[in-house]
Image (cartoon, rainbow, N blue to C red; front, side, top):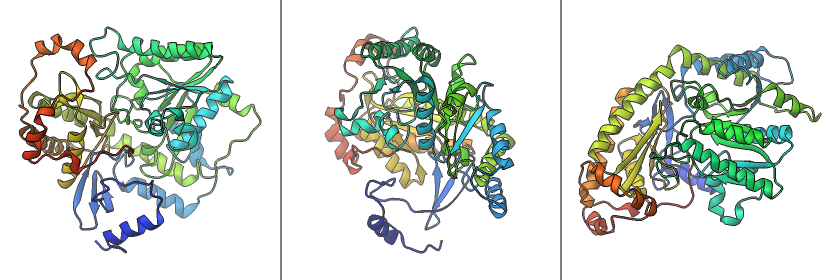
Length: 495
């Protein structure tokens, strides 16, 4: 394929003109992508990569219906939302139709970060309070207000980086967290921790404006909140005069299959006060939205301060948003998320039977995480091994990422047109790589004895972060597994 610059020249110019904190995937040998279609991306040599991580190209890269809608409207008109235009109200009507009835008012903006920043403003104005409760390992955006409530980011800057008005609740992780799968009601237990945070804040004369959480934590390690968690948290937060913000930037628009929004996994009796979205909403076009209740919107407007966003809700963006909604419905991408997602989990469960390094598989629809461990009993994170696998997959032209607090969770969140054949290809490659690693470290590919697991539960909790394979390190190096080949940076790259 003909490109203006060679890959080497592109890298050289990027180093010269782009800020050094703007990182690329696979920094030692980055991929230069020149075109993409569906779930595939192509480099400058025409090599095809299977995209397992791009939740931005939600309905597929370069979808023709989305492209046509953009071109048609661009040729006709694009302007700001101070002018009346049918696309804005038509899209708002179509989008809010996917929500519970009380979520009926839209504010259109340009990115997930803008949406979450505006959500904080709405919450603070409505409640009259300032403090925010966020989850450990959460990420909500790159602007200053959101870095402040994103432990995933601010914890890299040291303990002093946490602001006084920010309160961090434990991630509701039933695999690695303080309340695990053997707890009778982990949802209520994690919610009670939030309530204790509220009580402590009140003792210090602080008041809660909002609790904010991704409906399923992505950067936190593909965490699916236990049943009842959001309901109880909402009850405590409302009692404190705050609101519940559900961040659907990474996980909305039918990704979970059975529901259009991930917060709906918690049941019909839970409805957040504010929902934010971005990424998949425009299939790569810069578009996002905040949806809230009439009551909160009117409180925000009561200040007399106008809210205006130059590009938010422009005719082209809304035309693209409408096209994305149409494609999701016409191509039954929610149904595909269920069918392919279930098949992917089934394949991964088969690998869990075979490989001790797979500690946990969790996911819904096309949002799946594979928690890799060095010891299934101790749940020791296999961080270096996870990084090794994603680099080796890249060599096989498969793009996958690893995240979570220990960067040991393989993350699946591909375009929604992902197929069973694609799932089989990735899992076969992971099987091959795990077999090679286990051969190099002398680890057997067999199931852990469940009785031993039960006997050692106390040990698991006491030694979660210990390394149980020191004795295998030398043999691993001798047999060709070199985790240091792909150094683990303290700087995280959000995917």
